[in-house]
Length: 44
Image 1 (cartoon, one colour):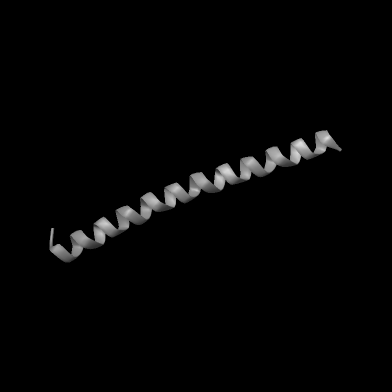
Image 2 (cartoon, one colour):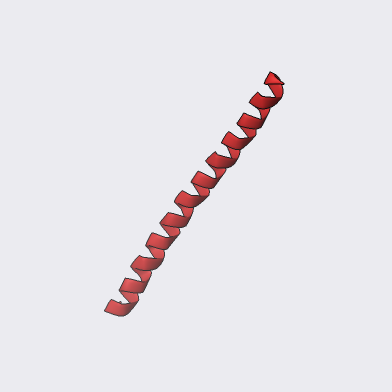
């Protein structure tokens, strides 16, 4: 694999990993938001 292609591949791999991490964070944020709404409804 040429050096340039290898660098591109590594960068793409890192971006893919970061996207996965962001997806997990977004899911957790959404779940937390839903939980907070449920808690608010119980209080009111």
